[in-house]
Image (cartoon, rainbow, N blue to C red; front, side):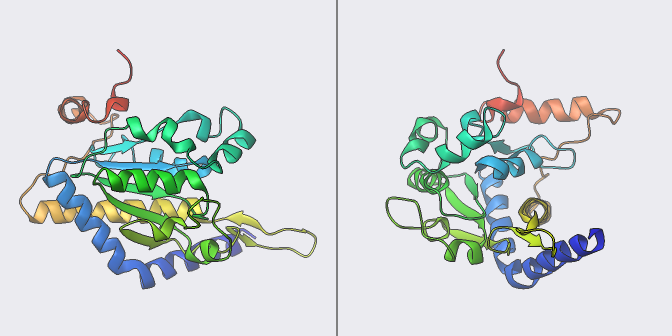
Amino acid sequence: MIEHYFQKVSERLELVLKHEKDNLKKAAYAVSEAIQKGGIIQLFGCGHSHILTEEVFYRAGGLASIKPIFFEPLMLHEGAVRSAMLERRNDFAQNFIEHEDIRPEDVFFVLSTSGRNPVPIDVALTAKEKGAYTIAITSLEYAKSQPSRHKSGKLLYEVVDLVINNHSVKGDAVLSHKNVSVPFSPTSTVVGSAILNAIFAEAIVFMAESGLEPPIFLSGNMEGADEHNNKLIAKYKERIPVLVGAS
């Protein structure tokens, strides 16, 4: 099964590269333009999707202008079942998203593989209302197989400016076995991570080729990194308070 899982992940990645390349480039260009205009890149996801917001935050070799939106009741450590139930509540997102500093110069990623639950949809709608350029990373196959739980009847891919299909299968699990009653082994996290890192890599090249020094963190375990990174933290800590935390 190890080889089989790697094969399935490779298939998903090939599908993304084949069918989503143009949208990846559009996303990268939007990211590059946002940073050059003084904006930041914001990301939100519920449950396991929030893992992707942490994957690219304060990351060695990654952009310093990344702001994950953490709302702990919608993560996993305060109760996974409760988190899943809260994600399904219409208007629940207003408990936190209205208070976030979202500006027209920003790019806002919303991460939801099923794309059917109200919280990610409401987050995308609010970010769009505030003028940010909104991008969904979702599975169109999965989303189109299930009815929306949002009061509008819409799915995530229907309310954003740009859609990137992660090509996850319905239910996300890609493996089966004759003695196992349900499918197993998801791909959305590993593929989503590749999508985001590819977008940001392309955005870095766009910035570099336009004459801007991209704001990239060095590994804190390399000599001289603290001085380099502290300059970037000083630049972005007002817009990204989670970089420094409570004083």
